[in-house]
Amino acid sequence: MVCGFGVLINSHAMGYKQQENRVSSLDAFLGSWTFSREITDHISGAQSHVKGILTFTALADGLLYHETGMLEIKGQRPMQAERRYLWQKAPVGIAVSFEDGRSFHTITLDGLRPHASHHCEPDQYEVDYDFTDWPRWRSVWQVRGPRKDYVLRSHHTRS
Image 1 (tube, rainbow, N blue to C red):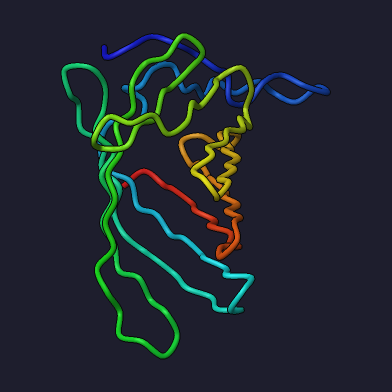
Image 2 (image 1 turned 90 degrees about the vertical axis):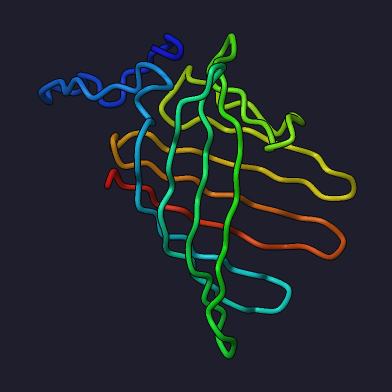
């Protein structure tokens, strides 16, 4: 096992049957996922979409997050999109770093909908994760800066 942490995804509440879906370690993310992403640019009014595959691969000290997909922007030819991050065990959850090792943000696992932020002068990145329907999960990024104002809504489903 790469690391050990746990968060109950659906809990017993108001008389409903308890479900034991859990994100119990980084290993819970291992493997392939399909994802779809909607990108809304509030400055230009443009809507873009990405569909693709996200793969989490085990490394000696965590997981490699690698996504590839096709980006579709209205009026343009589809283009290949790709991104990579490192996910590692952190005292309160998952430390997410850029591929070169620079810190990006931490996903705290003290709740079902963790929030994180990253400041990259002059821009501010805010993300809300939602693990309430595990193993399906979502992330919503709000990015703002002098020349940026967009939202990325991503949905992930195990392949």
